[in-house]
Length: 237
Image 1 (cartoon, rainbow, N blue to C red):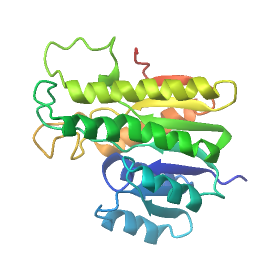
Image 2: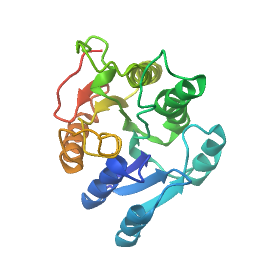
Image 3: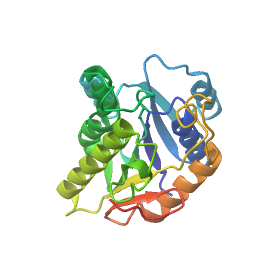
Image 4: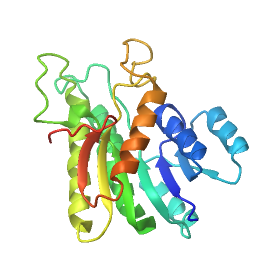
């Protein structure tokens, strides 16, 4: 029986960590990346519990110099799923009028360019019928933005850019059998989702992770580019 494997990029906390644990519980082999400066107690505990099925490595998606060492380490690996989780909320003000050049660069590099660039480099490690998943957001939906308040300009722009870069990648591989999924996890009770406790989220990590796993399993052989959420709802671009 084939041993399934997944690469999860951005897995030291929150949803990334929850995904690592869930896939391990389902019997998958997992390679999980973490920021070089991350607190690793939780990830290390999982490594101790699953020493033969979990491997980890440091990576910052905004650093081009981190890509080649990761590829070299994973050269003999092939993954059924590659999940680009890494992302940030950005500055609290979320305003184009207030944002500095550095703030805009950081959110676009972390949420859009960095994951898309890394995904391109990782394609050679994805199984011929594998799935590439990007952690998107319903706030990336241009057609779906009808809220009168909560503009979230920077975050929306970065995730919309990620969706487009995911589509560009898909268009380059669409003649094959691989699938690309832009996945909204819900509004989740993580430090990012609650702004470190300042606001109340709608669902917990377990609910989001269970939903995402089920949706990915349902669609990972569709050979399409999908924009869906953890409850399997399709979102308009």
